[in-house]
Image (tube, rainbow, N blue to C red; front, side):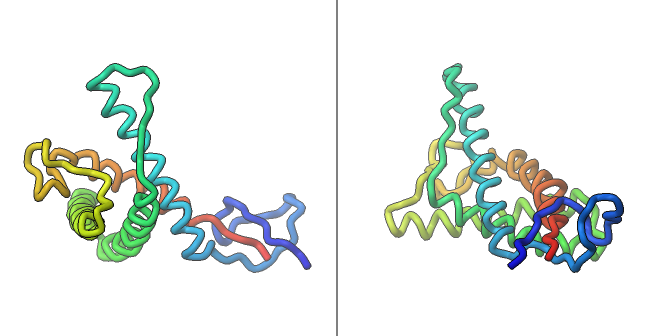
Length: 168
């Protein structure tokens, strides 16, 4: 049985001289994309909280933090943004419009997850101490950070994850 080979080549790339047999390629599965998106989201959250805490404490350990709940939250959010992005780009919506749509979606997603987790007594965040918060579940103070995260997700994470091809 031959194993699959993971490459970063785009579909239709010329593999002459690479020693690879020409074969059919296919994108990675939705499960693999969810996995990549979950890890990316958690890494960004840990980095963000490390820097955010450092600004207030100057603690050089940069000990960021997250929750295991973040894995399905980020996986699902970025996966849905992947589909939203495809529709908005196909309709030729400019970047500022796309970022506004992604940011609004992120706020709805975070509020929904936060409300559900709060009902379970498991919500790992509370923005009550922040200005412009709604029930402590979302805060407008993070809008620039969410828009930046959405930009990075669209331009780098989603785009490159969709370019990964498996060769049979």
